[in-house]
Image (cartoon, rainbow, N blue to C red; front, side, top):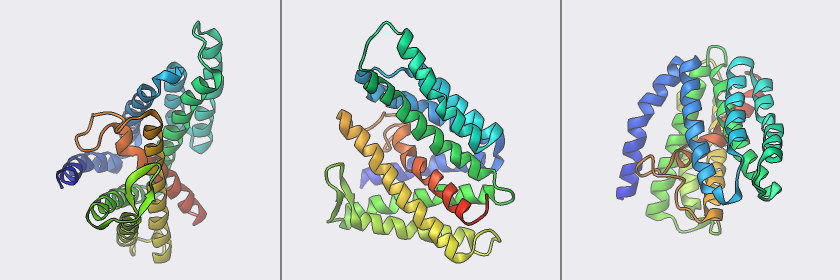
Length: 265
């Protein structure tokens, strides 16, 4: 179980720092999100360097997207992501290199939308009046619980693979355990807090868990496509930054949409 111990230790060391910046919110949390996004974007572009992504356009658009989220809300977040399209096209047009247009542009735009919307919408969850701090705490702790229980139970008793072609190590037993853990975290974190009803907290926990599992598999598909085990080696036991935030990149938008559906945005 050394890998599990390493994963838990690294997470427990980083979690207080992350939760502290979530507590402060504002530009403190934005700076953390930007740093994580830029590191993850660098890791992605390194993985797909053979496709010749137009990295300058990606970096500029990602910064614009997160700035838009912080300064202007969801409309400007989307505008920032959308800016990647003309930026990438212009850079392709003036470049001396002539890689495949579809490959280069696709490899440039995918991580901008993936990281920009994933982290940008989580920043907007933090802006919910009165309850934003609690909502983001819930998302992060639910993802942590889901990841830990899914990994541990999958290693111990997992027999039925979820997606053998993408990630042979992930099992349905682990998924069920992770979902139960995420739902429990959401229920107890939001219980009697004047924010969501108990049944809504359960739905939120389930949405976070499902989205986290899909986000993890999405990242696994990216790595398998390029023959990589990890996106990097920044975090012991976790691989790179992109390996660490992959679940959050889907769980954040899932939480945003779920809370929006319940009329709290």
